[in-house]
Length: 184
Image (cartoon, rainbow, N blue to C red):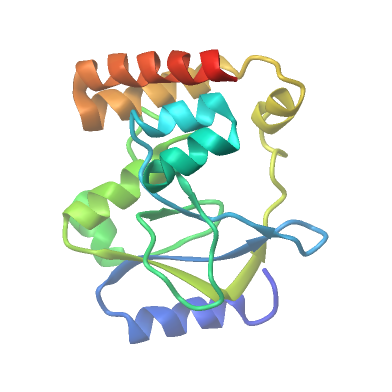
């Protein structure tokens, strides 16, 4: 936690009573900003993720998942749970994180459930925390080496798409991923 981060999150909670989840700005150890605000992951966003080309991203920009944070508080669809302040009332209303996930996709799921229950999601960049990305599991390193992700990543992905888009949505997400992969 950078100095004052917890205080700024609590202040944001008191000035935004409709905010059920408040996420801070995220930095790496060198102080470089990491993306921590996102649009919902959707079957269409899988084309972008798999294609990894600027032209596809530009064409489908409104489905591109990362939202580069501004210097002012914003309301993204979801925020990274590497650090988040979650109101007790949110947990009382919607429960705890879905146990069908292991590490990935649980934050977007929970933010969707909170938003569906009437809560806002707020990104508070004045509160800053350091995220040691890739230290708890091999996903970041595997991606960098272009190696397959661990099975639990795919299980969580399948759980998310099935939960929010149905089995047909999972099928379409996979189809779109293959379409994007063929472009890359």
